[in-house]
Length: 102
Image (cartoon, rainbow, N blue to C red):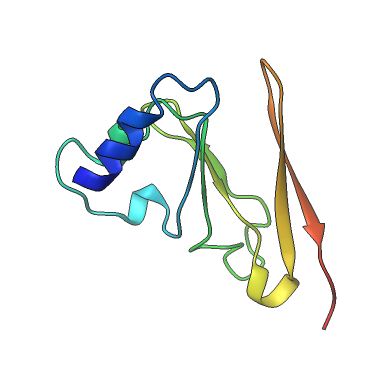
C-alpha cells in the first residue's frame, strides 16, 4: 500500500488520472486506508480479472464508494478485445475494439 499511496500522491494535482490493475477492488484485501481510498482522486480504475464472466455479463462497470469508476475490460484471452477511453470534461466513454480473430 505504501507504493500505491506514493503513486497516488504524485498524481493528486493531475486533472485526469486512470489506474490500471488486474483485480477488481471488490476482490482485493488491502491494509488501511484501503485500495479504493488510495485511488479516490482518479476518474477510473481499469481491471480485467472477471472479464465478462464467461459471457454472462458482457459489460461490467461500477462506481465505488469513493466515486471512482471501475471498468472491467473485455476478455482478451477469448475475444481479443482492447478498450479505448474517450475523456471529456464531463464524460468518460468506453469502447471495445476487436483486434483480430483466431
